[in-house]
Image (tube, rainbow, N blue to C red; front, side):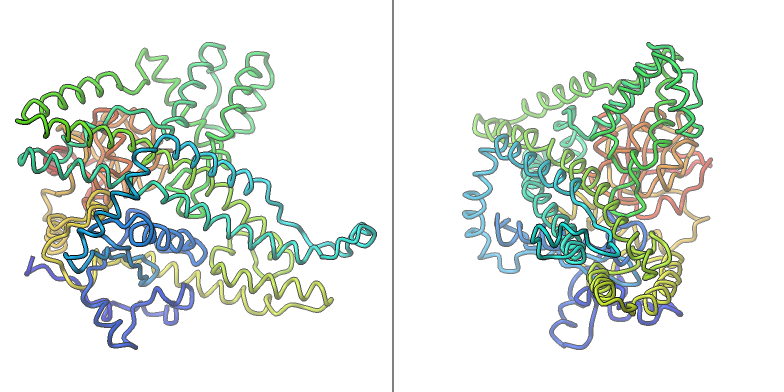
Length: 610
């Protein structure tokens, strides 16, 4: 690794025309040379670009979720469950792009004590997983309801007389400020819950991987992941609802409609017949909660849900209707995946020599399978259901700022930090209370226009894969499992940077799901591109999310820029028995739609054939 170099975080490029961009983000996210100790620390760490969560630069408001997991993941590692080899994950931002670095436990002598604490605390969760997970679901459903019920009040010209005669004692202005505080607090609380189980879920899987790697030195990582495949999770539920709607449409004889036209026209057509009304009843029953699934990852405000854009799920229903009418199955091949899983498990278990090893294998595999559903299920509750409602509540706040000319458009609110919105609301409310004019209209529209220009320049810039010092090895488990960042992947990124696009004949990533196929590339950067997919093509995407599920009915294989063996694309491909290569670094920019490639999901290699 000695010949592998990344730029210093303190010499990173500043884009002309964006000077002062730092004020768009929290001050503690900045690389700095002001303090020698902090500068030395930043230069000594390996900061890699978190493209898994952030494939585009961060809007000043959207960084709220990064702030939330910066706190939540780290606290569970270092202060609550005491993960033996790992502390938290530190964060920085440069030119709008998030960089993170895992902090290992520096002193090996501390690890035995941490193991003892972890076994006691995490052990309680592992032993009571089902009951605690049920309690977690109740907590999440509770705050989602609280969020959905939260009213963002508009300011009246004059308070209703009931405020006087009922002795209320507070104004709508106060309620508006309080509602915004509550909205933000619910968001942070949601992410506290998000990580209550997640680190432990990954840890159980990592323990199983570690045991298998030592017991079977030549075992490929994806063989280990296959032993945890074939387990049903609620993240498949939105897609299953679409399949049910497709089958119902055919059964009721209302399938000959324009599925890809204006959703309002389709709904009106369905209203025109008795069977159409029956289908609409099923549609409306599915919408809450399953259509709160995001069209993206849910991390950005522009990742609207199916409920916000019915055209997306309806176009997916068409895919399933067409396949059913062609006599093709639309069901996931769960039985065959489970059969292969059980065969593989029995084969490797038979290689173990002692009863003790077999008992350990059974226990660790059982734990991995028990915790695995949460690793996927939490996504629906947090990044999809909660986030989709949350974004729309913030838009309700934005409507008030638009009304008082603090911003020009509802979608401009994302260019303000959450603390700046609170300041603006105080300005607005006190101006309303006094009958004066707030200062916001003189400040924010001009500032937002400048920030928009910065964001556009950020998008045109290519962030380096990493900055800082290169570690001899990367052993932090979550970094490997979720992000797919390993010593090998870093070396592959460096090799790709050294050649031009025309010279690349092979791209190497992380083996996500086994199998080898040849097919033509289809680059899909957003869920909106899925409609262009043709049967048998190789999907090449920055990353995938649950709302991309219908794409897996068409493709021959998947390739992503980011992700490890536990990322969404790898998990779903294993469930469908499709090859996948993830964590390639730059497949979407290296490969072009129409190119012929060979994807080897066992080796993690993509050969460009023409």
